[in-house]
Image (cartoon, rainbow, N blue to C red):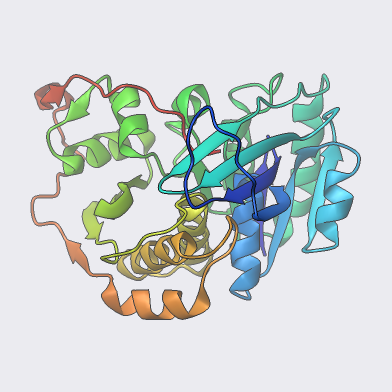
Length: 323
C-alpha cells in the first residue's frame, strides 16, 4: 500500500471553453468539480492502475469523509475549509488557485502520529504539493525521516522552502527545472549537471521533470533520460501527479530506474489527454509506453562532482508550481 500525503487539499473545478477572452462574459457549458490536491491525484491514479493506495492529509470536516466514498482516505479535520482551484481549458490552460486555509495549532504532530500508526503497512510514501498556512515548512522532511526509519521509500514533490528543507533527507525529489534553478541559485547549462548536483546534496535520487522534454534522473550513480511522447496535447494539470504515481509505484516495487522512468513519462502524457486531473486515459497510456525511450547518459557525473565548477545562467522568473 502506497501512502500519499496531501497537506493543502483542494476542490478542483475545471471549465472547458472554446475560447477565453479577458473582460468578456463566458457561458460555461462543460464543468467538472472533484476533490483534489496533488497527493489526492497521485492516489487516484494509483487506484486507477489497481495499485493499493491510501490518501492521508489535512482537510476540513467533510473532505475526508467524501473522499473516502471514492477511495481509501484518512484526513484529519485540521482546516476550517478546503480551498478551491479553478482551471480554464480553452486555447490554452489558465489556472486560478486560492490560498489554503490556516491549519490548527499542532496539526503537524497529529499527522505525524497518524502516519506513525500506518507506516508499517506502507510499501512507499509520497508527499505532494503546497503546504497549508500554519504547516511548518520542514514537515515533509520530518515525514520522510519517519518513513525512512521504517524502511519505507519516500518521494517528495515539493517547491520552495519545503523542497529546500527536504534536500538531504535521501528521499526521491522531483523538482521541475525552475524549482531546481532556485535551489541551485541559477540554471546550469546542462540538466545533467543540475540533477547530479542536487542528488549529491540530497544523498538520494533526484528526478528533474522537464514537461514536453521528458525526465532526467540521477540515481545510484547513474544518470538517465526519459523522453516524452510526441504530439500530446490537452490539459497538463495533473500530469506531474500522474508521473509521481508512476515513480511511487516503481520505488514501491523496487523496479529498475529505466522501467520506472518509462512508466512515469507515459503516465504523465496519459494524464494530459484525460479530461480532468487525477485521471489517465488507459488506452493512451498503453500506447505511450511504446513511445517513451530511456537512455543512460554517458556523461553522467559521479559523487566527486566539483560543485564550484558548475556553470550557471541567471535563474528564470519564478512561476507558481501546479498545486
